[in-house]
Length: 558
Image (cartoon, rainbow, N blue to C red):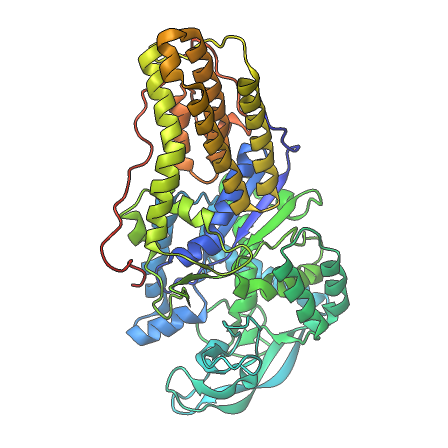
């Protein structure tokens, strides 16, 4: 029994780079990292060559803001939180092929290469502009050091580069009643010189490309097309700052650095090259970036949409010879009691805290079942507990436990030989094939929440089959019939274990071993093989433990 998989392809899974300025919360996990991992695990199992890349954005303004608040160098902040990210990926099972930082020599080298290529092609030029200057602090202000009211939606906490409320990118001088984050004073405009990226040159190519996209989420595509149709403007790609990647030419003089919005985007390429160097094949990255048959998926939150559907594709077009995004399945926001999760505003408990209380697959499952794919989704601790108890324990865990326990008890822990199959048996085996194929198609389309629902609906169906055939009763009067029912149920469990592996990697590996199968489940492929009659099953223990709902209000904020 197998689910037909596509031919072997190269799949680049590029995941948003988190600012290394604080611990990550469940909003980050559900917004980008868990969806990317589910997608990557499926494609590895389906036989495709996956490269999943990301890293800590150590030059983002939030890092320097925290460093100045604490009176420490920015690198100290990075060195504190980057290891926490690595710990979270390990404990939650987020399977990066490389998770690096923007502070490596390799990253600076790749940023310089992109800059110089764009300069050579005429897409970078010098220009004088006016930038906010804080007279009290005696320094120019990077865009995120300026806050004010968004001119589009009236949000009063908009930043100088973007409004988190409506998602529009901004320039600091567009803000109403701007103020310095350093001193709170009203900044003044002073002339400065920077390099600019000629984004306006890509207006029509980007519009043509976007209008040709199919299968993208409506909110991503509609926002991106509308953004371009409003008109693209050239953007400065350097800033008067001391922390960041140096500009590769000296035309502007001292005190200039690459602006983080372009530098961090190049991280997807630099991380791929760093991975290739580490693999011992320095040119291996080309299979994911230059081969037209390769596919590239960018997993981000909706606040990053224009950077990945407009600015980064324009940079790739200007550079030449590199693949444009196949899809940008940006998620909406995760909220806590209706408030958007935010590191800077202290909304959302650090994700590592949940892993101290709950099994990683329980957290993964609750988030995957509530992914904010098309609308904002509220997450509560009570929801994690409910999903675990009512679905993982009562549906999937119960199916595995009672079938394996009865097989051990009645058939000495060996797969019973099936007798003649009746219509119920054949329907469940056929349903397993259909389910596995459908789950694969849904994951490939990045409909991850639907894929999980499809698998769990079949688990319910398998439980219903057991209730109908009642092998525990048949074992006394018709052992052969009981053996057939258990064999068919083991077929269903095998298929479900494959389907649930991208979502529940830890418990799926356990079930793989309970079924007496050797090696890692990922290496078994996206197919469910018929159990071999007489094969020895492993000793099984309950997959999930039931959690008690904590008294009082759920713990939602740090």
